[in-house]
Length: 421
Image 1 (cartoon, rainbow, N blue to C red):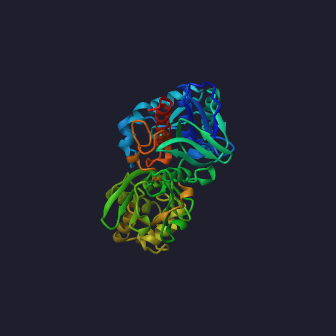
Image 2 (cartoon, rainbow, N blue to C red):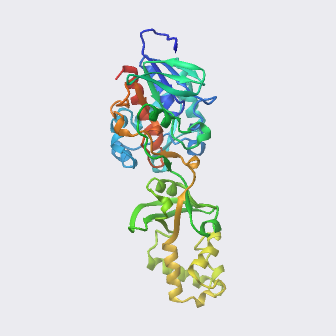
Image 3 (cartoon, one colour):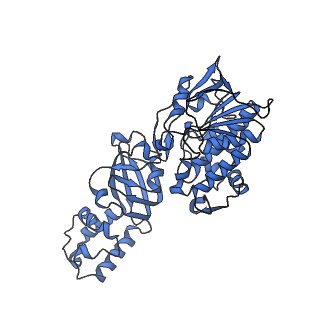
């Protein structure tokens, strides 16, 4: 057994497993409270996944209050109450500003570094770890060492390390090339924890048919999306914003958020309904169509829709309306206009699956929160073992909420581990 060589023999010895957002925050928090900390990261550098979040811009948090935050957490929100109370979205902003990373707030209260560089967030966390004397080892953890329901160390690729507390911050299974390959779930199960079903969340959706491929690459702004469970006719998601058609189906902010609401999608039970003109009711839309038809009264129907639709959508739209594209617009009947309005207000897309978990932003599922003390993040089964971040069965919508969960749970776990509670 190899013990860490402490700078302070009287300090608590803490091992943090995983050098991502949660891991670095846990290490910083624990070290600031006087613990001797070893941070274990199997990659050759810290924050590999963090560097690509928010398309490389890093949406670090959301500038909202606690109640609004929790309303954006569909999975086990109440479990996070203490963590978010101890380290809030305002605390996260103050933390990074103090580390020399100026922030800005954009639409939807999303907070980013002013530089739009995720690397600045990673560099700030890395510097802070090193300035506090955190010992960073690039070793792969093989297993947790537990005896008598007490965690006392870890076994790595290079030997055993002993500690008073272990904080597991290994992430989920999304983006496995960054190191998030599900190790934490295996560690948890090996010591008796329950891991709930793992599936992708905040992930693009696969659609049936040729409609989406025919409009591949087309982005839509200011559209309304409704997802309906076809078996119950119940609306499971509704919002307004941006989305995009792809060769496999649908993606974009609206779609990623919607995916967090969908279960058993492989049963083909869900259908997306897109309102292309949410600002216009049917009467207003009919007037708009008549105005365009008057403007282009001598054109073919196919060539009279440029003011109404993006070019890439025109041919699929004409097909869906079941109107001859070569028909002159002055000959379009009232019934045909009504078909146009129905398609514009309710473009239906059958959904048949998620894209693979390696394309998901976060993982749904994880260590069962009923087995974790929400006031400390310590395991209720194994003394001295803590969990933080995506490895837990908590996930949220897009907008900085998932990174904030990582920071808040890591702060609470680090505080608890350093104090031995």
